[in-house]
Image (cartoon, rainbow, N blue to C red; front, side, top):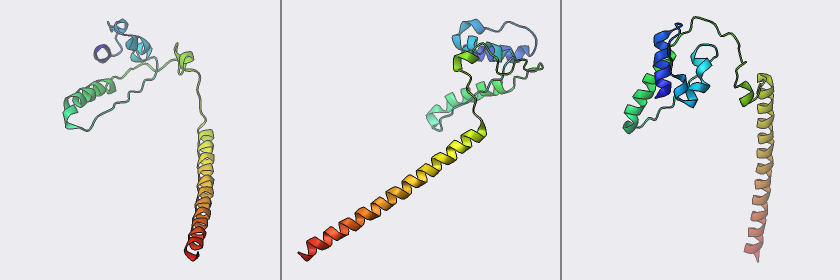
Length: 137
């Protein structure tokens, strides 16, 4: 509820300094600089496709539309330099390294799959041999 009030106050104020209730919640205190337009912020919305959650989904979508319509005129001054950056650690992945690791993982899985397939064929052959020995005796 506090985050909703902060988003409402932010969207109403625009770039004008106004009273935004950041201190009423720990979450809004963490998001304060982003809600003031000094950091980038991404909102992920989760919806449930069941009929009984229609009202909750409607509220979530209204909440997300308020957040989406907030536009700050000033640009973001300090990209990736927040007071909470050290809290999460400086995690940076190079896309090429991630793709290379993913390709290596897929290759390892393909090799493991081939090995297991060969082992399965070998076990089937052994089973057939044992069945032939049992039927012949």
